[in-house]
Amino acid sequence: MFFSLTAPQYPSGFSTLLQFNLAAPLNLVGVYGIAIEAMYVLALLPWGQTRTRPLEIDAPQFQEVVIFEPKFPLSPSNPLKASHMVLGLWAALIAMSTQHRMFFDLFLTMKMRDEAVGTCHIRKRRQSLQDAPSFEQTHANSTVLLEQGGLGNSSSLAFLGQGNRSNVSSGLTDDSGYMIDPDDSHFGIRYEYLGVRVDSRGFFLATIDGLTNAAREDKSRRCRDLTGLDPDDTVIFTVIALQGEGKTLTYQYAARVMLMTARLLVATKRMEEVRLFLEYDGVKFGEGHVDNVTPLRHDNRDALTVG
Image (cartoon, rainbow, N blue to C red; front, top):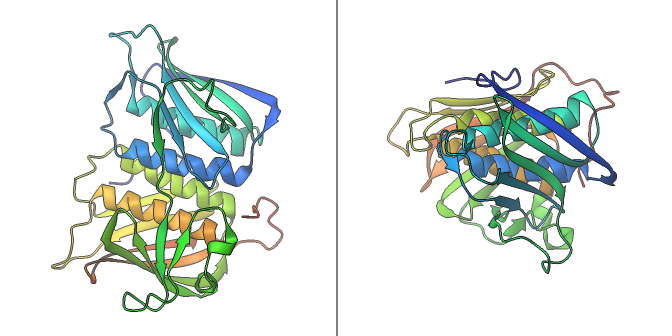
């Protein structure tokens, strides 16, 4: 099922109020990176699930965090739902990257029928936990195992996403490789860079759009294809199921592919078109690709530098 939130169809009565803190700048790649981590967490929640506790999402390689809080006191008749959190985070990113072009501390209030139901805060991580509130925290396992030359060769095993280039092996400069899901060693993705640059902002927003599409679906449901497209129609990210005897591609696996690919491109600092081949226990069960919708102009001023 393809549904693009690049032209969001918010539920009736849903609105947002944004407040930027211009004294607190944020890192562009950090904002996009933690937003992808957060959207993946939200994609695993039931779309209509009610949220009664705050939720903070962070990852070790980024200084930015995303925090959701329901309005207190809780309103049984107008609660904060997972769907509001997805739409609120998407609205925050669109406001930052396309409407205002301002990457600063952002506090967003989500409303239903003009009544606040919760907030989404994108800000720098606290330097000290002394005064930190008691939130439920999700620490993204941003490690991705990478093997050069396939499963049988572990000589170039590397850990991606830890924010320390000295820990990344020279294998990350190769045009192809194999990465293993740290949460499921049976699941791996073989990738091939195509040497064609993609717009960084377009890639990040296409990935986030794909994750918002996954969030609307049951995570265990069979997925024929999952697509993400950025608002400017510059980059498209697609994951496709293959027919056969292999693993069933579910929306959770499709979303996982988008998350792992984003981590890979950030860690390797290579924003390029890429082909993906999904394997489970060595059997291919899906494919994916990141492509330019139209050829990227060399003078594109919106391209970001990763790293």
